[in-house]
Each structure stands twice: as structure tokens, then as C-alpha cells.
Image (cartoon, rainbow, N blue to C red; front, top):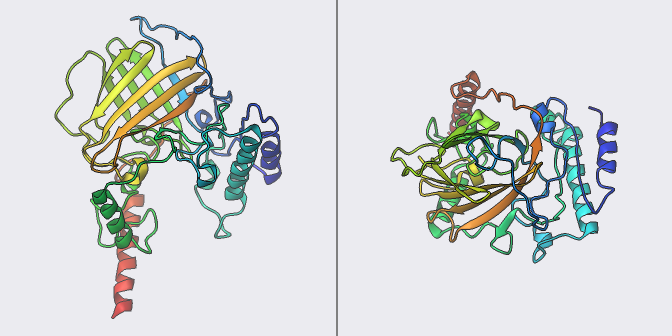
Length: 350
């Protein structure tokens, strides 16, 4: 993909301020990540819509859904106090986002290039609501303050990892302590699949399956699948990496209640704890749009619960396996390199 080609898409992608759609196909990106070019409409004025039904009469949410968006999770400081952008502000925001994406591809900071950049997802959209954050509660569009204990944990991690790269183990760490990105490095939890799911750089697809009494939530990132019973059974007692999920219907909305997490997930840089209680809501807004809303409650981390909403666009493409698996030979190299780096540092201090 040439820079001129990307520039042409960037320039043409922000000409309509009324309904902004930026679609930049990325070489090496899966068809699922490139699909779904229609603009999500989850947050525009509500209008009556009744989803098609499954064989057992429930709203049909099945299919592959893409949740890439240029709308940030938290409201940027430049938009403090502003929940919705004007047409002009939205156009400028989309232009900046496109330029940032372009520069990541063609002007790496180290002048050499990043092996990841070629598959970054360019299917980023400023949705037609022009919201300045995905967070809808609190009203300031920001993640609530951390508890005092959580802040101490964050500070301690930062101190112990000073001068350490994002995907390097914490000095002295081995298997249990690989740093906030350890679950990703070990291919246990995807950085954008949570739960809850949040937009990120790539692999922003989820597939929903339904059968009488069950819903399956399959994430493209780290190919995690959550099997959600709908029969009213109580939560299980065995802690799990992705928690223990139970679902029920509230009219057109599928509500998934998840608790009993093993420990942190990869969500929010691994800041949640085993006390996380997650409520997710899935509802079709129209034939091509799924509203995904989640509420996070973790008294060990946040001073209050908070909620975000993400519009997902229907894709007509299948998902492909993300071939990441724990125990791959790359992990051996990462750990060996970390030990060698620590040895050099120790010898330098002598």
C-alpha cells in the first residue's frame, strides 16, 4: 500500500461533515477487519426496530460485528465539557486521526519501522452522533478515579518497571509477573477483547452465535469464546480468566452478567481485579448496527461504576483464526532476553 494511495483515502474520507466515514484498508489485515464500511448508527435518535427472530423466537443478534472507531474511550481534554462535536470539529478530528494512522505506517519514530504496523486496522469511523467519548457515565466521559489501594498498585508497578518495554517482563519476573501486558504476551487474553470489549489497533471483530438456551461470544483477538447460558441457572463457583457469564433477555436487549473472574483481564491495562462485576447489553439498532453497552463495577479498582457504549457494524466477511497461543517459541526468547538484560544491568552496577 503506497503513501499516495493512503493519502487519497484520507483526503476523501473526511469531506462529508454530516456523516463521517474513514475507511483505510490495510495491507495484511484480515477481510473481517476490513469489512463493514457502513457507518454505525447506534447512538442516533431512537426509532422503532424489531430484530429478526431466531428459531426459538429470540432477537437474532448473530453474525460478525466490527467495533473499530475513532471515538476514544475517554473524552480528550480538548473536548472537556463537550459531549458532542460540531460538524467542523468532527471533520477536524477525523482528519487528525487519519494523519496519525498514516504517519504510523510511513514515518515510524525509530526511522526503521514496526513489524506490527502493516496490519493495523484503518477501518476507523467517527460515528454520526459525533460523541467525544465512548464513556456515557460519568457525564464527563472519563474513567472514574482509582481507589487509593489501586493507585498504590499502579504506582508500584510503574516504579518496578521503570525503563522496561511494554512487552518485557518486570525485572525479576518470570511466569506470573510479566507486567500489565503479560496476559497478551502469553496469548491468554486479548488486549481488546476484555471482557469488556474495547476498540484498539486491530482484530476488532466479534461473532455472536445463538442456539436455544445459549449465546456464544467469540472474539477474533486470542480466539476466546464465552458460552453464555440463558436458562436462569446460578453463577458457577470456579473462577475463570474471562469470568463466569449468565444471560437473559430484556425485550430486544441481551443482558450478560459476568463475575467470578480468576484475576485481572487485559482490559484497561490490567487494572481490574477478581472482584470485577460486568454487565453487558447487546441490542440491534437496525439491520447493520449492534449497540454494545457495558457497565464496569470493581470496588478494588474504581471509586464508582462506569458505563460505555460502542456501536458495532455488521460485516459480511468471516473471521479468521488469530494464531496466538500460549507456549509459543517467541515467549522463550522474550524471557531469555529479559534475563540477559538484567544480567548486563547487574554487571554494570558492580
